Image 1 (cartoon, rainbow, N blue to C red):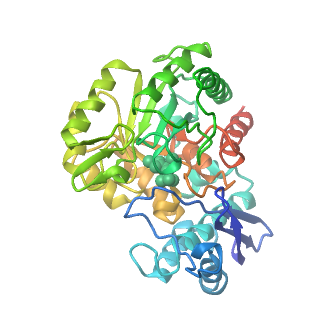
Image 2 (image 1 turned 180 degrees about the horizontal axis):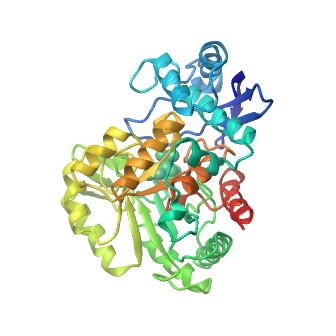
Image 3 (image 1 turned 45 degrees about the vertical axis):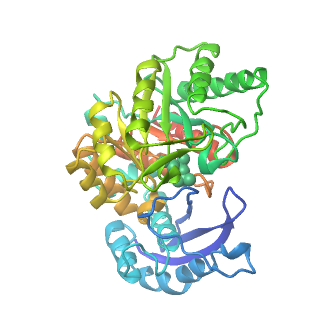
Length: 421
Ligand code: 2PG
Ligand code: MG
């Protein structure tokens, strides 16, 4: 089965700014379409998003160059290649770019081709994408590890957001409802959305705004401390009729690189500048008070020392995102330095499907949790990350609770469950 045609176009992502969509057609006639997302609070070592920097279009953020790179350069090298050899295709794409961060042709161009090829080939083989990914990358069936039952990831839904994802909200970027109950995905999704609605009522009662941020999470203004949102979510779990600490708990993503300045952490809402050690004390006090499930990026990506110190004291998984940016070498470093227990997985941080899967497999080998995630700034309606999560046996997927580009992920999850049954 060979790649016959590759065609890219500029589309809009969730923030109303451009992204890239790629359509790959195989000689079997199968067509795969994929679109690429990008973040608002990106890690410094992520694969590069190529923008046009033409000030007359979208303030410089157009993606016509990346589109051209697909149509005129990448298509030339992959047309005629064996579509079933995803690894060879991705290696070819990486070689054609030739830079460490894919900054020459753009990870937004490269990843679109990579994802669309996988999807077209899955369709051609009449397999669900998650089944095809397991097959083509020879992933040990997660079902074998879980007594014959394929594990479906549980929702980690951002319910309150601040930082770079919303104006005038909290310093910490995300307060996440992490479902902990092992039950049907459909029930987990229902529970998560009921808790979201309960939270809406609580915020209204408290006279707070129920406007939402980038990811469809509430972004109330005027919250004077970074702890209150945890209390709100715990309360919402109870008011929705569930038990905090049993059915669900709270996961935090501080995205702390965003408020790290000159070796200190600036909490604007609290009018405080904290040392790393003071920040750690604040976090550790929370873990004794609340049903917390995990911590993500609680220290800056440049503060490896404190990551290590924090991990020793933490009772719950420490998740690396900006620190490791879905990069095998950085994950290996995180494993060696014992700074985390879990890795957030974002296809566009890596820039090809193969590199993303390799990262998940390395994580699995070292008993690191993998948490495939949406992006904050420019998410699309693509649901690839859900199939990826199922294929590699992820415990959770991190996706916002509302807005079309988020709920399509939960809809895909429930669809997979229906198909498996
Ligand atoms: C994160 C993500 C997604 P962004 O930090 O985990 O929630 O945000 O895509 O803006 O990096
Ligand atoms: Mg993060």
